[in-house]
Length: 109
Image (cartoon, rainbow, N blue to C red; front, side):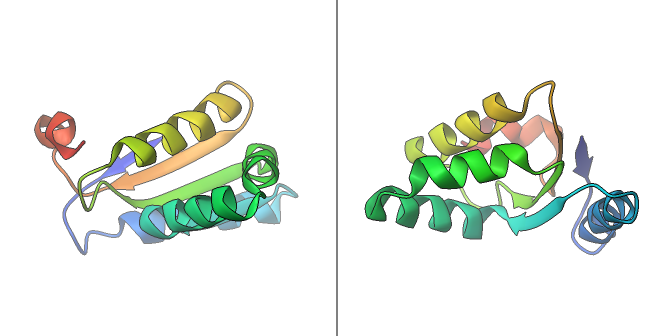
């Protein structure tokens, strides 16, 4: 699910509300800001825990990725995102918040 809108419109609040409701129904949820998640993945790759972190992310029932593309994506960041989404596709829910208008998405990377 993509949640779009300008700064301050409640995208993060809405996404976290969905995750909270999932938890109340017995599902596991995790919230991460995208820049922080990419930092975690970079560190995990350096210390040898990358595959373990990817596996953990793949098992979360509802993954909230907040503030997607607030800065340009690097090749490394694109690869991280692709691996996460491929592991989850058709199996688990992913909620992504983004403040860019859809016309600018291609230029964000």
